[in-house]
Length: 194
Image (cartoon, rainbow, N blue to C red; front, top):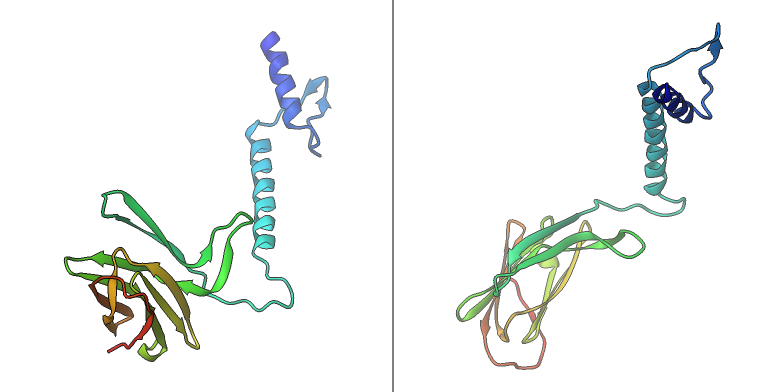
């Protein structure tokens, strides 16, 4: 008998506020299977989530949308054998939520070879003439400002290089820049793409 009262109490809690609350019929309570209320609540939650998502991605009046929105990450091993995670794209996480920039950060790999440092950057959809490269003995800056795409990446090289030894090629959306290792020179120079 105690179990029956407990089930009645649980059923009444589930149906509080519903328009179709079980009514007494001929001295007996009319029962509906418990899962109908659960599915109704799930449907309501789904509608609420849809509305929240629609509002979150709604573009305010007067703002110009741009796209596409690109975000990704690459996992590789650093020289010490530890995993290194690199993010790329134009969506950056922040304290207040994702920040979308018009300028993308390309996916870049830096390979430290015996007497050279090779940098590979994925820059799809741009022309060779739109790419600007600047280097110093420890840094490389990749910048693209074309009509369709914008890229920007500043990276620190793993070793000192001789900026005057730089050779750059661009083919099928992949930029390759090779430097000879050297002692620090201390000045920055522009690199021509062959």
